[in-house]
Image (cartoon, rainbow, N blue to C red; front, side):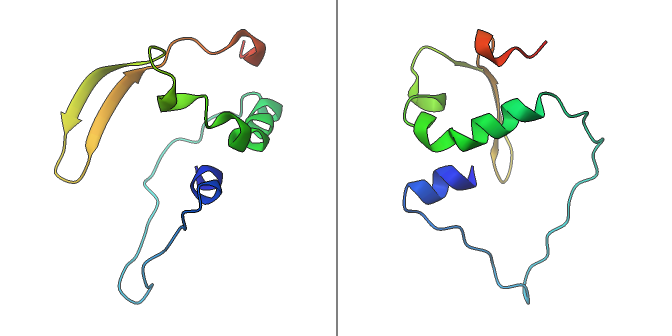
Length: 88
């Protein structure tokens, strides 16, 4: 996400640490799957971002929208991964 933000000439800012604190939510650590694929996707993110994701009409659909006080929680069907990802 950071690469996409920076490549569109936006900046990533952080609030002054005197006023705010962040803490990680507890979660179960996931098993690493296809680490080489993850690195490949990160390297190619800037190339792909104009043609993948939300820009691809008809490739995804919203299943559910849950409006919460501070954000919208969306459940989205993005279909199956491309065959060249070989996730199995």
